[in-house]
Length: 169
Image (cartoon, rainbow, N blue to C red; front, side, top):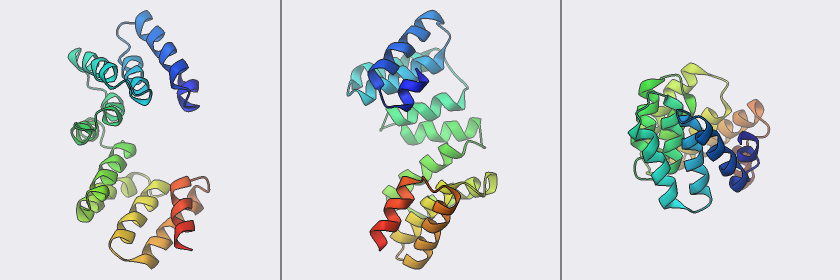
């Protein structure tokens, strides 16, 4: 299922996640990932239904909340905050919060969300990518370019940073 999800073959991934969830009724990760697959297949009602089943059973797994943030656009901030409260070292959740803040033009809030990421992993290429976006939105083009360049030094395959560098040429 994970392999199909990685390949973005959501139909096959969904089939395997559903089989895993059926085989082990306590497998919340399989259910939440099935929910994610339903969302990617534009089956929002089914997606929400499966996500709700996971939360009805109760969970304290930060990863479940992180995945749920990708499913529910209304509760995504709530889920990301819950994820970092359960696991303060979850850099992807901090980056998700920063991304939302940047999209809402709340740059200082985005900087606040990025601080733990640099503290946890100073070589996280996405930290520099998002910091570059903040600098770009703030009109600090040179600083943004420096951040995008650093992101690519750390991860030459960082597509988002690559796109930003090309757009500034």
